[in-house]
Structures are given as structure tokens and as C-alpha cells.
Length: 316
Image (cartoon, rainbow, N blue to C red; front, side):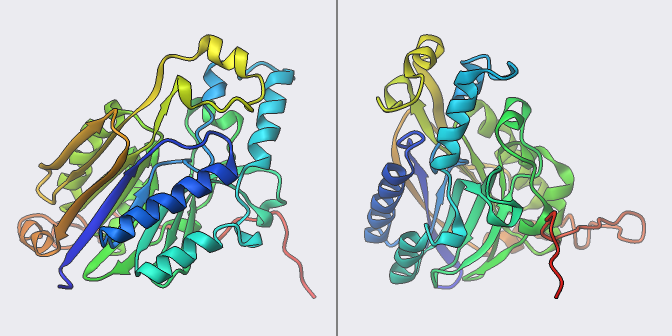
């Protein structure tokens, strides 16, 4: 039925800062989701190849510190370059199983020179096509030491059965204007991806659902002290400062009335499944629609620049 959509929330840990190992884990998770007939599978922020936890553990803001330079270089080597077709196998799995995917990853973007890193949220449709790459607009706090700020190109929504899906990274979900940019394009299934903390997802997931009268899926990753691979540069220094649990999950789903469908799931690795009924969106929009009958575009209006930023324009 076109009004029903089976979603899978992939609450998993990365093979931290190991691109190849994490890709293999993502592919295995997608194969599991395909066996359960999931139609949309979502992975957490920066899962591929992992969140930069070292910044809070190694005096990350210190100037010219060898440990931070070497970890950043290791991170860059394990980041994804979409242009070199590193996501082809994931796109193939999406196409073969008629499954859409939101994937949080670290992108080393060729159109920005190929050296800086972006926290990107990639949407792959059920035909296996990459339809948008949203680079996080404003990295949060110590993330700015390793991630570059993105642009508005990825503020896009996509049709999926009767739904219109869009997504944001982590604290972008607290930014009213990017949310409004997605609402204005007809979003009614909002995807919020996080590195993994129940304290992040517990309040904002229900708030966005109630504000937008949309379904909201929050997906978080997991990370414990035992998840650092032995090949990690400066591992002993990282482990000396690391807590036992760095990311405890918190994946959840709120309905268009702002109430829980799936409450935050903590400390549990695996896929969380739920079937969503689009008809509930229409019911909740009857009394409130933030960009429709309950808006005043003659008074307030949002301008969005979706041009992909680059320092280079080649002519001729």
C-alpha cells in the first residue's frame, strides 16, 4: 500500500575510522534490512567512518599538536569521496532491494579541492541513485576543528511512496530556518541523524514532530571504549581519557501528533523497525500546518540559497 512505509533505524557502531570495515558493516546491515522488507533505512551522523571523538580526549584545540594532526590525517584517508564511486555497492543494494537510504558520512569533497572534510547526509533513492548530499551547515563546538561548514545545496526533499522525506544532521535539527526550508518543500517525514546520545534525541524528536505535524525519525550510533580498533593512531592516549560509553544510541520515532511511536532505545545495537501510515499526516495538518494554512508569507518569508559553494569557477 502506497500510504504505508516500513522504516529501519540502523543503530550500530562504526568500525571506527576504518572506511573499509565500516562499509562492510553497513552493507551487512542493509542486507539484514532487505530480508525484513524495509523500504527506508537510516544510519546515524558521521557513521562512515565514525564521529571525531578524539577531539574531546586529546586536547583537540591545541595548536600544532602532533597527535591531532596525525589523527586528522588518518580521518581524511578514511573519508569518502563520492566522485570515485566509493558508495557504488550501497547504491547497488538500494536498487536491488527497492530500498531508500539516508547515510551519515564524512565526505572529502572533490568540488572543494579534495582535502577538507564535511559531515554529510546522503540520500540514495530506491533506484540506487544519489539524489542529495547535505553538508552540515554549522559543525558544533569541537567538531569545527576537523569538519568544514557546508552549504544549502543539500536542503532538499525527496518523494518516497506517498511521503516526502528530508533530513538534517545533529544540532542542525535545532536550527529553525533549515527546518522551515524542508517544511516549505512539503516534508512530512523528517530524518534527524545523531552521533548517539539519548539526551539529544529525547526532546527535539517530539518537538519537531509537533511543530511540523510530520513523522520524525531520529537515528543515533553507538560507541564504547571497546569499539576503538587496535590500529587507531595514538590509541593509548585516547583510551586513557575515554569514558566506557561515548555514544549510547537513543534512536526513536515520533508521530505527527508529537507523541512517541518508538521511545528512545539505549545501549542496544541493531535495526529497529516500524511501519508508518501517511494518512496520519493529513489528520494532524487539519488544525496546524506551519507552511500552509497556519503561515503568513505576506509577513515572514524564508530565502534559501541551494547553490553548491566552490572557490573555483572554470570558464572556457
